[in-house]
Image 1 (spheres, rainbow, N blue to C red):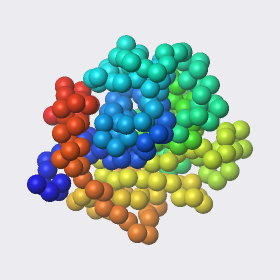
Image 2 (cartoon, rainbow, N blue to C red; image 1 turned 90 degrees about the vertical axis):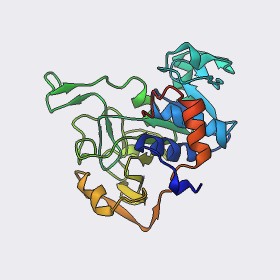
Image 3 (cartoon, rainbow, N blue to C red; image 1 turned 120 degrees about the horizontal axis):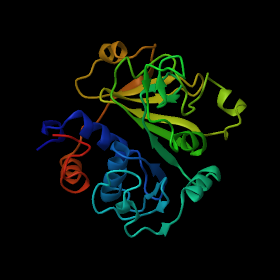
Image 4 (cartoon, helix red, strand yellow; image 1 turned 135 degrees about the vertical axis):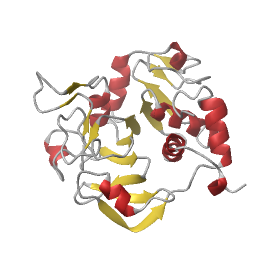
Length: 260
């Protein structure tokens, strides 16, 4: 059966696409949820020597089943190193972590992420969100930041109400002017409509690939700012049978992340 004939949902699509971007022998700090599923899928299919790190202090574990959080004891199962949060942050600061996967309530055109509050009054926000955890550190110090998020206008906003995690801040040069390491920053955003990269000159979001059956107009309608578009716009390759089988039966058999 061809991959295009397989039934899959939007969460499965996002996880599979994100997993493909993790190379063997690279390092990645992941959090709970879809980023962790993507890392586990990558390890099982094409990146057996992908080194996964957790904020709680685990380095390179063999994950038997899906942990329910980064503090789950399963994140330490057969780990190469069981250390502390201090060391994980130190590794990031020293440039030893290639990727971090983050999420948030808002993402703006420069890849800044808000997971702190909705509203303009910090003392009395409309919605109080969980906050940074390690997201500010990882987004500031890891080489490439990737995000997985559903695509709608409330989430993809022109300007974040609060910047929890810096992307390219206000545009070219702003990140470096703030004292963040040169060469770091947002890399990819995986949504249920498309894959987004960032323009080298303007540092703004640029759509690189549309998912099967998705039109440009739909993506723009669900974005609160003007998107840039790659000249040679690709179509995302749907999940393969092997990816779906592994994701459903070994990575997330209880469907915590991918749903039903």
